[in-house]
Amino acid sequence: MTTFIGLDGFRRGWVAVEIAPRRRSLFFWPQLDALWARGFERAAIDMPIGLPDAGERACDRAARILLRPHGSRVFGGARRGLWAHGSQAEANRVLKARGEAMVSAQLWNLGPKIMEVDAAITPERQRRVIEAHPELVFWRLNGHTPLPRKKDADGLALRRALLLSAGFAALDDWLDHARIGTGAKADDVLDACAMAIAARDARASCPEGPAPRDTRGLKMQIWY
Image (tube, rainbow, N blue to C red; front, side, top):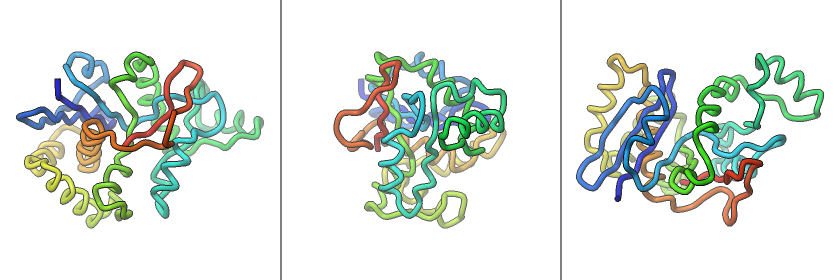
């Protein structure tokens, strides 16, 4: 089996890009459960897998170093039990009292997706489902050179060009389809393509070497 799948979350679910021997396909799934219905060798997802009980993951720190001066593109601070609090403000009150770094609005809003992934992934499933980060993939494809912001026209254009060079011939059709009724944005599709490349290649990881594990036995490691 030589099928690889990349997943990026969006407001209505998941953008999934599949690389198979004779085709590349785009899907929009409402839930992560759709992944298990497909046959694949490896999948990569742009969400934290493995959550510490407190503090920050070493993989997030290592990824931010590689992406300097754009390290803020990696949202650190995901912790197990964080979203058991009723609001971001309540969570931050508790974290502040513990002397821990508070959670950003961006990370807080990813809570439902992070919890969906955490509920689905087990150490057994993690043998085929890895965490990756699209900015690290684009950085690698761009010769280890930082890219402009993906929300800017030149940043989108460069990511599109890198993916076209990587064999995503139908990319423009996919971007047109995403704009019509799916709720996905252009960067969601581009990031899902980057995740599919990470799933196929898995060339390097943050941190290098053996990955630390959380209390559920999940590796805390970002591939690209």
